[in-house]
Length: 123
Image 1 (cartoon, one colour):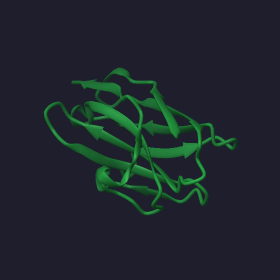
Image 2 (cartoon, one colour):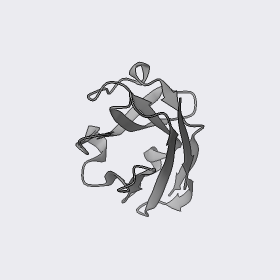
Image 3 (spheres, helix red, strand yellow):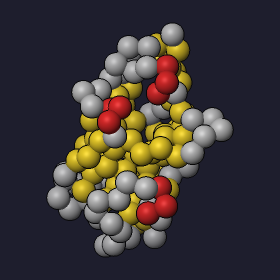
Image 4 (cartoon, rainbow, N blue to C red):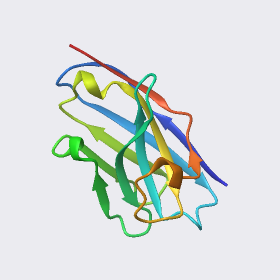
């Protein structure tokens, strides 16, 4: 079992920055990717960014380019999502998830999820 706990959400003004953290613990032997998803109220979970668990390769949804950065600490205990130049449309619950597929982008391919953390961006 992989345990994921998100933190760092909050309210910011448009154009501001926020860093989310995902504490990773437990059995990670079958983990090949950790990703951030977001879910707008009433919508589906949307892929945001992915980090290769062993390779550290990164991947981003098109709308994040130049604004979001995914990273982790050397001990593999925490995955971060640095979000800059936030827009109102970035408002969502952000989730951390783990997959046994290195190149997964679909939410259905992620088996372990955190509880989510709310990000609210106001104009």
